[in-house]
Length: 205
Image (tube, rainbow, N blue to C red):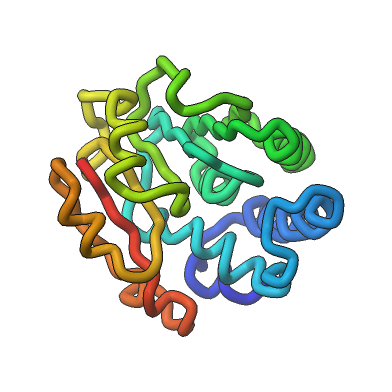
């Protein structure tokens, strides 16, 4: 593990151990159930775990924050963030049962008590959350339409409650179609590896 300690030097020994274990668990599970592209497994730390943790470069969630990872797949970005923010409650939702089983197994191994994994479609959810995170599940306008009713009004963090969406490539057209305020963070300002040159984090609020 080389990138996570470099960019997050204040992690505890337990957190570093959990990230090491997380990578081992993904390697184990991905052979059985494909939750990460197999050709990309050699870039697991950089392309998946560090990419998920880019949210922690933008905001430090306060204790008592509720975060929904909508369309979590195999637990990204939710599990890396749950390790980083042990005082924050994470709900990881995906419609595909076998992916949620992987999430549950990984969280059990890591002893993450702040994660609830649920097989469900986002449209069926009724709870409210401070933030909704996701990694490029669909277009920004469609994702906003699916999730905006789940955002809690009262904010406890310095960033307004809303969506934190990890996305790459050209997103100008999608941003233009949004009917909410947004701010785009360019991840190349935080990480120096070429992978992040086209990566963005969009905060919709």
